Length: 563
Ligand code: HC1
Ligand code: SF4
Image (cartoon, rainbow, N blue to C red; front, side):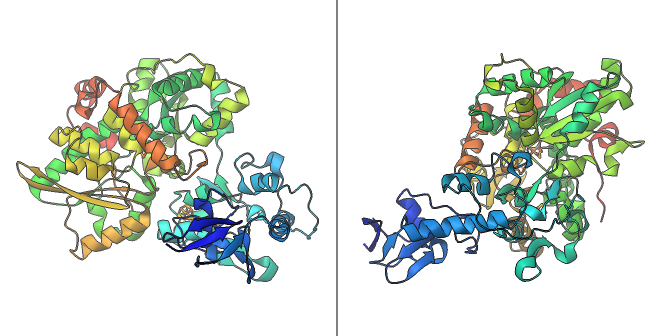
């Protein structure tokens, strides 16, 4: 085998694409802003500089490993180069850490500490650039951009959209949507993956905490909250807590201490969604029309279809997302039950997602201007609320959710994973609880999975994709007849909602897989695991909706799409 030496120690080269990968294999975490194994290599930040004998200082991320290379990672000159690079970045923007929303999870901040940058020796005239506050989900602050290009590449390579790009020249280079338009005025679907990879506070999640606090403080309002499936496997991360079943109970207790009158589960509405979507699918299958059916719970994907999939819009499920089914049903049933007027009932959703903020503002999800879901807070924002209040989450006594919308099955919980909606449908229509090859395939982490299940009325061909670039490729294959499918699940974020941009910043490359496993573990621990076993869902049908896809159900739980 070929080898090279790193700081005098021999390391084998085993197909690594660049020196950075070989060095990381040797358990040395070189600093970088712009290197992500799942994105292309840009080599801009030059923090990963190392010395290669005979060549001098090179960026490890863009240098292929060669046999016999002598690499040194900690010489005085490379350490100084890294510091100078960081100082230049700090000098060229407005990096006001104590008041920055990214403080605590900012890479620029943590690297400055780690590399011992204790002063900035350069001063550049910094002009204050205006913030982009145009969108509901995201805030872009060009003053904090370090030009690493991570957002540009994630939007292009993972989402296939290319909304962001470098513009300007020389010292005026910035990253922005074309023609410096606002993020709301371009084909941005608000998935927030740009914010999730941004190492600094240049793209962050828009904060709606103050509006929620104001509603809670208003004695005329009754504020209820729904908690999305994926929140429960990430909320504990900033507190160093595991996502065991107690964490959700502790979160319920914390939400009550924060002033929410009732605490409900979006997973209840996910069970309801499966009742509707499963029936919708079986009806289309019986008629042989509008197939394949595309799922509609991911608002970034729905917006993508409205922008680019006009020809297949009829194939998109008419089901509202669980978030919106919940809002609609809550505003229909709870005013009577709680004795409040609809206008005084405030529905808050805690979501792993930035696009859910825009979804809640869609005009069709409101009655006479009163939205079904009033405010969406991300997991990150809930973490902030808990921290600001000083609630010791880990010490709280677990409490149960409120009824009727606190009951859920394991199927509703796995919605938070890519493949979870499909698995939930398969449980309802085929009684599959795992074990089969089809389920194994659906659970794999690849960008596109396909599987066929033999049903009495013929084969059921399934596809699951995550990442909109993968979704577009599948759409093109379906159009061209290269892929024959009946049911397609799409989630815009890598890993599904668990990898949503509203979740706490991922601390390692393994975070995604751990969240997925935890969702599966929570599902496996549930007594009820098939959506139609949810007794409160049955009760809603008995008392209010009749049966799935009834006119009442259509009115409250379905939607239409705008081209
Ligand atoms: Fe999701 Fe969904 S699973 S979209 O991934 O269908 O955000 O968690 O709440 O609405 O239930 C997100 C998660 C979420 C909806 C459900
Ligand atoms: Fe691209 Fe998503 Fe960011 Fe919009 S939110 S710019 S679609 S990555």
